[in-house]
Amino acid sequence: MDFIFRPTVPRAPRVVRWTTPSPASFKLNSDGSSLGNPGPAGAAGIIRDAEGQVILAYQDALGTATSVIAELTAVWRGLEMALAHGLAPLWLRWTLRQ
Image (cartoon, rainbow, N blue to C red; front, side):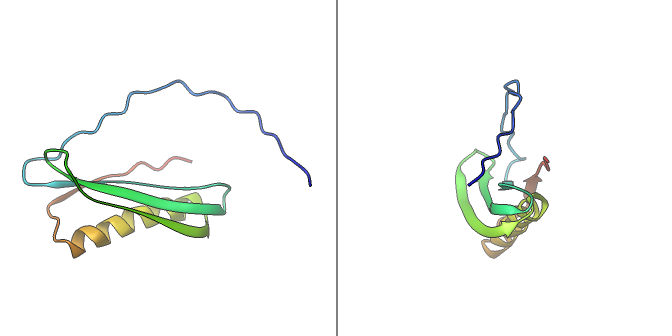
């Protein structure tokens, strides 16, 4: 078995803040990733109300997928769940990183 070692460059820490949606709204934060491109992938997300209370959360193993497919699946599943539970109006927070 061969091992491939890739040097990594440490990233500087960054402050991440959750911003509330407007009153009587909901906010979907989602993320998807893959280990390799393609590789084993997953998608997850959380929907909160304007007070920051968790309304629902989800996660899915996707099998083998690219990072873009994982990201888009995370958004899509979150939108499906919001629609199924009548969570509107909905803000979407999504960042594509590669």
